[in-house]
Image (cartoon, rainbow, N blue to C red; front, top):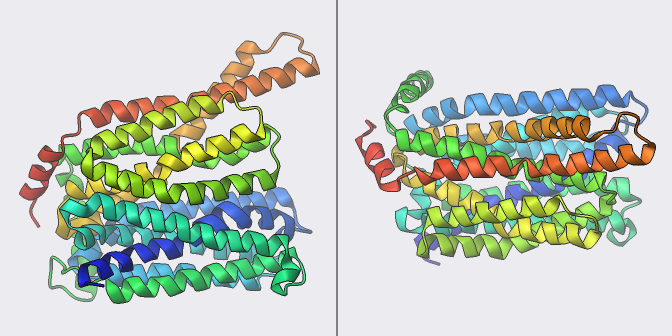
Length: 443
């Protein structure tokens, strides 16, 4: 394996490793296990509220810290050091969930939130290594390769974890609860192991300054404040970030609301786990396909294609009534979910200064953390409004149920607005103009 391929594999294997946290912990087992095991014997409303507040606080903290941390990392040649800190913070916290006993929901919340901070913080510096790893010509394919390995790696471990919970005795475990706890431990080991490839195989980009210690932090803060002012000069990047915020808000809303939407239509939790596995394994080849498409057909047109498909998926979701249709929806989402994320990341890399990548990816990830703010609120407003308009004066129970389901479907359809706004704004993003603005920006 030549040096360049080794660097690309080393970078992409981080996605292979940390995606297990997103699948097994965040999307798969933690929400269910929290209710059924850690919250047993406690006030469910209190524990759920605390989990929600803690999650929001963690996301807000990472979002606000991201650009500042990026500026510090750029200045002091410290991208890999920050990646190491956040990645192994997440690893330790995830492994710690194995030791949390039944009813100890406070400890579960603390460890989970710290794990989310590690996961989210690590991604800032992982993304910022992309321009150094890929070079401009291979940005799309390398970015997509990372997402593809993430789908495959996270999916494989999640499949093993699901089998452990369904057949614990086959794995030498006493019951499903023990299997879930060992699943958290397996995620920590998986994530920690594959992070080593990134640390050993990916070189550290040279920083923009020679400061050390506290001076690096002070200079990083000064540069962050300066960049806020400079964003007005980088109109192309600013326009892209606004467009990205709208359409990725739509993507995240679909991801977050799909489970709740499926449950409201009467699907069982096992059906939702199967759908999640479908997304992982179908997402692998399609992420690679969109990487190739971005390089050959064009990134902007490829992103447009993913958004058109998302609009179709969203409208299709409003007519769901059978389990097979829910699975088809999962397949459709899997074809574009990795593509839109990978190509957005690689296209953004073309329009920012390479030596300030961590700082600018801090802003990028900040918007990613603030995503899914408009979407759920829009769904709620449309759903409540539709319910008030459609509900008869003295409704029967059957009418209430029918109107409620129709209002839910209308609320899902409203997400299309976010994709349309994002596509309109994206039309005015000029990559060549963005490159020129980045080149004129002081280092």
